[in-house]
Length: 238
Ligand code: CA
Image (tube, rainbow, N blue to C red; front, side, top):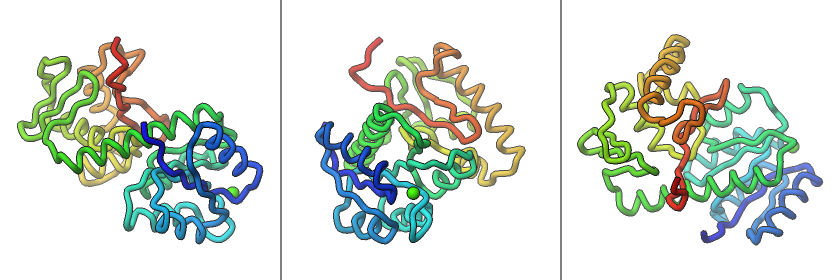
């Protein structure tokens, strides 16, 4: 995989050094910013492939940085924050972050999240180029023109809500989606009872999609936050 330029936004020097040293060791190119203003400048001048963003910055909140970048770019943004409250993660995700890591984090996990973000970026680019109506992920195929989904060549019989839910997850494969985001997309609202319905529909969708309930392959739960469709590596044949 072609390694993207990574923008590291972190005001805490030891943490910034840990991240940049890790990136250097793994042959990533990077550029660093120590506050929000520098981050916005670097994002627009370097157009990085992935942004690693701390939320607690000296001049502005990291969420503000996400909002401003999202006004003009889809570049993957991974939040790295000491804030471990679900509502902080949710706020960052609802404003367009792709993923989050809570400090202290493991270096291996950071590298894995960067690879997910890279895959998401390359999928986005391929889909923009082909604008095809067929979505494929592992054994799962969605024929968007026909409105049908298939697993291993067999059609899956989905209710309209389950199908819509599957399409929202697929359109954002690799990205953590909050309950609010999903219910907005599926029902156009996000009342508490929509979130309860979401759990029910998610359970029935999974029953049809996952061969084993104990080890889901396609849909990952982020407790208290939301869900993510995992991208299945094509070389990962079972
Ligand atoms: Ca900080």
